[in-house]
Image 1 (cartoon, rainbow, N blue to C red):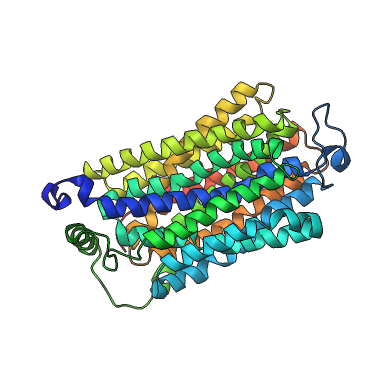
Image 2: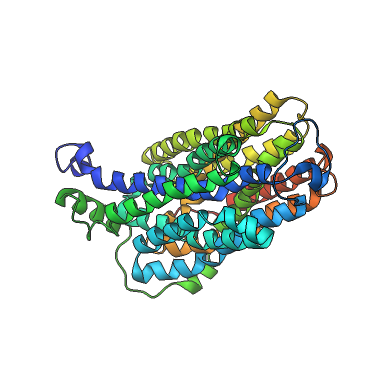
Length: 452
């Protein structure tokens, strides 16, 4: 294996092209999550807290818009409506037309639409803002199925836990960048502060989209930059594990496979819990902990720093276990248990430590640190079941999971609408923790890492 992995005389040369692909997908995932999460901080600065639901205290924000918590929940969810409806269509389309152009041009649409967020909110109110966020969701729709498809074509099987963890850790990296920088831009930026959030991140994401289309090829066979030795190694490794076939899409087999439903349920549970935190954590810090806007973004980003770091560590551990003859099935279940039971316990307990900012932060940091293990659990399990149809599988589970996930800010908004006190926030977190716990348990019963 060592000689095959070093066809050009060293690993640094032999991994150059696939490392570039993983790096660009990591940055793409980061940009996608920046676009997804920046509204969570921006909305704290956009809303006039005094007029919307009464004076909160001396530090209350006096934004431009009078929106209730319930309406804010719908605004935060609007992105996901667009995101959800593109999942399954792209899962089919990339099988026949490839993933590269869908991903690059989709993110370009997402990026350009970001520039329209301020004018849509000011001219069209909540409805206009929801429409633009919906369009952004449409553009971001290809990110997960296309990333999965490109990983399946570029990454050998024994590198997938690390590569998948690295790419999807971009979600945490994007959130880490987005939340504190959004807080600073909202406080010090031009045009009222909060519009800068969308101008700056829209520009950065546009640059990435152009770079991705120029630098990344569909697969090693089509690439003109890759060495012959690396191309041969990748192609032989992938097709040795999953020989080429000409069968039609196995819709019937997918529909009857318990392992597919294990991934689906775990994915749905993850999205509900994660979207609860991603969309509502800045609001919780604002209303219950009374953290000011500048500090809010930094503090809200801390759990995602832990998740990003631990996702990489868990990815290394998972690949070591698999290379050490631990079964893929057991490895995926172990990682997923850490990744979902951990944050479930954190969600259930955090509402009882609200009197201490330090302990609250610690609970969220530990919980989301554990959550990083899911990228070596259910999140990469599609590639174990079927590398050829990984893009389709992830598009189906991601679609349904995001349908469940978009309910999270709406449910939270309804629960806290009349009273954003800690008792109602406990209900929000209990629901999220319970959904995560169920998803992890279902996965442990029915999941497998065997090729289907």
